[in-house]
Image (cartoon, rainbow, N blue to C red):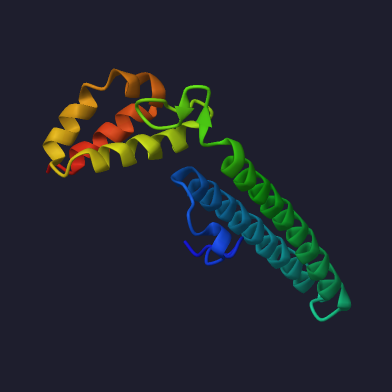
Length: 164
């Protein structure tokens, strides 16, 4: 995925956490969906005008410009929201009264389930390089069952696939 909702090479984005990277990927996905919807809407307008023999009129140009402006406005809202969430996460998101968030010692329950999945997956990928030991340790992790909810089985299947 090409990240262009923000400049990932900017100095302020060099030391991002997994959660912040997940936020950026989610915002980029949302931006891509907005632009795809805009392109689809412009195509529909063009086909409708073509059907009515008006494809060369200024209506197409005006309507395309309006669609692009609306898409740009929506993308800017997504970008601003991302910047606010990244700033908040940098200031307040790394700890609570129990200290720095870290799975399994102090899990962050403010994360949504896909983000929790990433945190637990990264934890187990760095625990050991032996895939069977990793799977066995994960299978005995009772915190992961409640922390991940329905994502528990997905991660189990992923870790099991490394054993094959």
